[in-house]
Length: 117
Image (cartoon, rainbow, N blue to C red):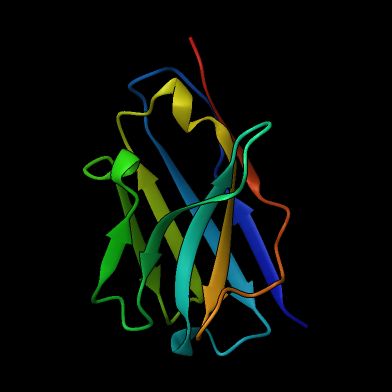
């Protein structure tokens, strides 16, 4: 049974920081590319950051480059997203997912990030 559990979200002021975590189970975690997505109200789900199975290569959408850092721990089956210099437009529900060739159809419950003064 696949399970993805996101945590670490919350309410933060503009310019603040948060660290999100995703614990995966039911998959051979070390084999998969991992990604963080987000979905803001009324908008489509957006891919924010990806990391290869080895953790060597990362990619980011332009709007978060220099502010977000994705990392993984294959021994603990976790992937994290460190977010700094947060902006109101970063407000969304954040999800992790996994992929070999395409992203899985399974989604966890996500974690809410709200950036507001």
